Length: 255
Ligand code: 13P
Image 1 (spheres, rainbow, N blue to C red):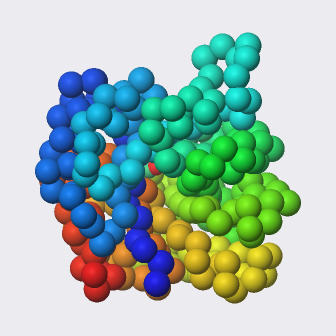
Image 2: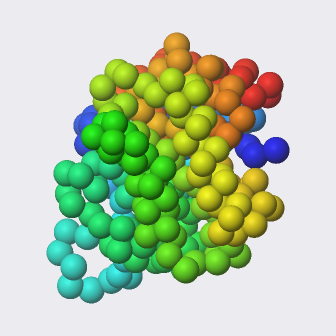
């Protein structure tokens, strides 16, 4: 069985004291968990959060990375720097980076390659806008983002891949995809992975759902066959809400 993975994407939120307080509250409750749990703070708080995690079973992730390992790239952060501060995961291709910052599939692919080569674990985000969904293009868009992001990497290289399906229209809007809508796209993604890499690999990849996940809707989303956890934005900023989502996930998966 795929171990469910619930990660909090804090985005550009919290100050240092708030970040440490939040992770301490989580660490109290998360000493050993059936569900894998991660937090992705802003770069500047990674070290303080790593220290606050202590011996709790909480993975540390970054929200982005650059593909070069060092050099004259003002403002950028490398995989090696992330590993130096105990990061294990990196979010790539989040819709806010695609749509606000203008990242392309080509750039995301270069980042993914660097992440894989470094031994970090990628969380590759895909998802359609409301216009694309209304035009019946959801599967085409998701397929292009998967193909563009993964490129010609092999199943062996992608052993640690996590995918996050985040419909853009559900992010930060309070309007989550229904369990059926989400499951349809998750099934499509797993089918695409099966065709490209074979069933054994496709069955092993965890596909998170992201977009207005809350304690109140997590259970029914996580009960879907092809949903293996969540990438949580707003609700990951409050310990009680994030813990509620983790518990709902464990319950939905019978753990
Ligand atoms: P919200 O949970 O705030 O909708 O954000 C989802 C998200 O973008 C996680 O990466």
